[in-house]
Amino acid sequence: MKLNPVQTDGSRYYSSEEFAKTAQQLYGLSKGQVNGFIVYAKGLNKSYLRSEKDFIPILKKYLGK
Image (cartoon, rainbow, N blue to C red):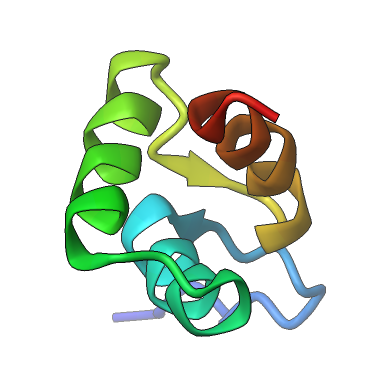
């Protein structure tokens, strides 16, 4: 049995939950804002993105900035 090689090209997806935990510390978000952002991102079908930076415009829109 031959296994597929592990991808090492950096093609990783980041979840909205991972980003929200980071954003909570960086932007001082409350727990309610974190949970609301996760639901908001899922509603936009943006639960998984290639970079955490891709979540920033979604967060700004969610926060009304």
